[in-house]
Length: 321
Image (tube, rainbow, N blue to C red):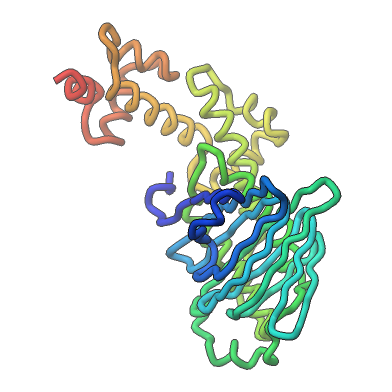
């Protein structure tokens, strides 16, 4: 599995109304000059998935309404309200972004007001892309001097549908990082988005298959982690996520280049290692292997040694040394 080989992370920041007398910094924007939260018990939560090697971040913002004055000088920002609306002030110009609209803002200083819906809830997904990603600074400067645009091209609509699902799959789950293939596909989609916005479409385009596959893989992995100590069959797993066995296999191949059985085996190996490193008196390699879903003990020992560079007995011995 490719989680560990790719540099990305999920960070969460929660700011309460009572914290505003201190300096409340944003994890999303470079400089937040002023922040105000609506209501006596206002709260602002930000989840940020940073994909460092690809030069972009995906965020999720939730509050009961808030207002922020900020300066962003390095990133293009794309905003997608899911509940409530956004009112953006750029100098003397004001813009409104409603639910379902996917809007782009150039690097700029601005005032953003998040207005809650009738239930008192505001939620939005954000995409921030480094202005240097395409190395097209000259072309970007020629974007008709537009600081704001609502995007309606097909790739924008596709991202507007996909990004909220991706954030749900990533934030607050045991799966905390994007596999290399998913991150690379997102990078291609972002290249398409910026290029079409500039009126210079790319010669190659994304397949638009891997994000739906990633969603199914995330669902399947959650089940694997919850039931890895059981005799979990792949047909049962496919039925649990509502797809055919063939679709499940293709999804794992698309995302990881591995069959689902191999991913389940790695999940079990990771759990076995954690158990061996924290073994209680009386626990043995055999008992831990069986309790983490391995039936063939010699096969378990071979896989473990190949994966971690030491035998299960050596790991257990280090725990008890």
